[in-house]
Length: 359
Ligand SMILES: Cc1cc2nc3c(=O)[nH]c(=O)nc-3n(C[C@H](O)[C@H](O)[C@H](O)COP(=O)(O)OP(=O)(O)OC[C@H]3O[C@@H](n4cnc5c(N)ncnc54)[C@H](O)[C@@H]3O)c2cc1C
Image (cartoon, rainbow, N blue to C red; front, side, top):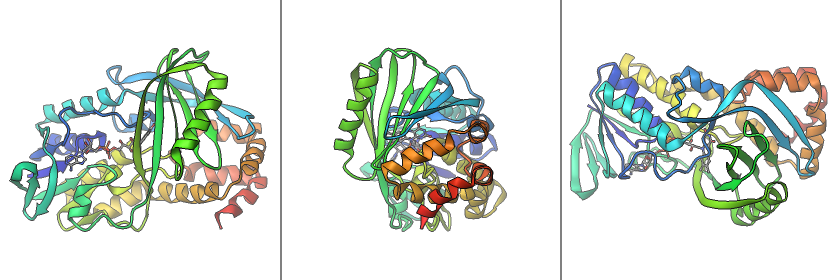
């Protein structure tokens, strides 16, 4: 028996992969409905297609262009060779749960994990279930990690976004905003609805207010609702397994340090975890081989960005705004910075001075 705690995209995807290979899988989710509450913008690169076939049931928009704004409000527009997809997160999580159920996994809702007394998973109301393997796919503040001594000294940033009603000229274009205090975005769901928000380490509310004031100057809007959540910071030293216990997805801090997306990275790690369980292989080795290099490059880029001033961002945009550099960024997938960094640095040595900010 394999017990997975958490029916987010990563737990559901892992349940599907294991159940379709004949494993007995139970998924325990604390909420009464899968996919709710939503705490995500739902933008993914085309790398998602390597993991799951996109379906109209959960893809609500396609992104063909993205604009990157510097603090002085200059911008560069990139045309994506491979479109990004916008997911309806509730429908996406439910779709993956349905695949897992059809493959034989059992889902238990309103079942909160509280402790692990090997070989028993302890749920609230003192329910206990015997298990051979325990997987924590239970998000950034993983209770499984806490109960099994795998929590480490993890750090977080905060994501805060508004769903707004507005009028967009181009529903297929995303806007990204670079700023020394935050990373911001405007992601269209349709011509009239967008997800607009920021990730910041500190003072999220004043930065969010300032950001929304700036957005209002460009797009008049009405707020539909707010969504927020913690995002774990990738830490290459964090242990993600111990005996028969494994962490995956946000629970294992497998999140891009650059833009803080974690859907693809978590699902890729779930694929490696299913291999590790099915073929009795080393999980840490497998997931680090699959996504570790790009997460480490991402951490270096993040360290550089954390030392940037707004003037640095303004200057960076001017240096990047060259045809040969834009072409590389338009072609390569930003989920895999290792494919971009060296190409860009060799074509534009002027960028090396920014890399010095890493130190
Ligand atoms: C504002 C914001 C915007 C984001 N935008 C993007 C984006 O555009 N693209 C992207 O790729 N990523 C984005 N992310 C990150 C993305 O949401 C996560 O990386 C992703 O949801 C991780 O999936 P997961 O399944 O590992 O964890 P989660 O989605 O957090 O799922 C964990 C599940 O475990 C359940 N759970 C928790 N504790 C327990 C317990 N004790 N017992 C039982 N169940 C439990 C929870 O209820 C939840 O269902 C964003 C995050 C935030 C906060």
